[in-house]
Length: 231
Ligand code: C5P
Image 1 (cartoon, rainbow, N blue to C red):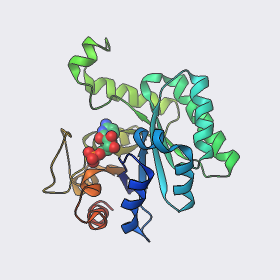
Image 2 (image 1 turned 90 degrees about the vertical axis):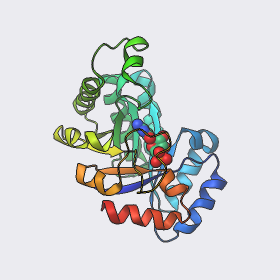
Image 3 (image 1 turned 90 degrees about the horizontal axis):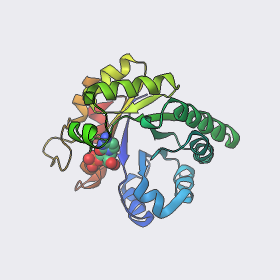
Image 4 (image 1 turned 180 degrees about the horizontal axis):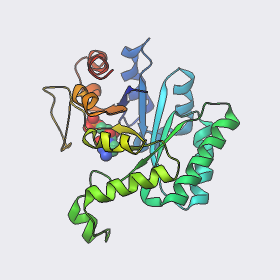
């Protein structure tokens, strides 16, 4: 279970399908986030599935357990391959999410999807954790505790940095790791970046690559380079 997931941070279906034109015959794993999902909805996810793409639907659900469960039934019916929740919703919410997701996938005749948890957003730093979220623990301890909670809830993995992949693997969880750059690319707003090759050495299960592929002069060549380094 190792793959390169392209972060499709586009604002419309047209832009996404224009981008995918050069990927004919390759069927890459795609990450669809809230920007595109809120613009185009479940219909576009179904369309991509019918075209043979694997989908990580990055919606980061966080609500009361009953509501999350019902929403997850609907995401399971779409045939998504990976989706996610915020671990801060708690163990009961994560368990409910998993139940709903499996129920939806089963109803629609799809294989069991993977459910992963976001521990702490990379936009949250130690000062914000303490002053705004009122959590007075070290960030690394909070991330590890949330990953343990995800495991207890029966989730499959977490979103983390490649640098945390091996600790996550020790918990028996898969790691889905953004913050990847091909050598020479601009780091942009990412703080701790690695190449696909380093992510492989650090033990990432999946790498999520956005701008290094989507903004490349030759996106297919960049994607194939990521695959060659990582798999
Ligand atoms: O363009 P880039 O490769 O930096 O994109 C990374 C993708 O992974 C984006 O879609 C971003 O929202 C997502 N992501 C992240 N860091 C996290 C969680 C998700 O960069 N902790």
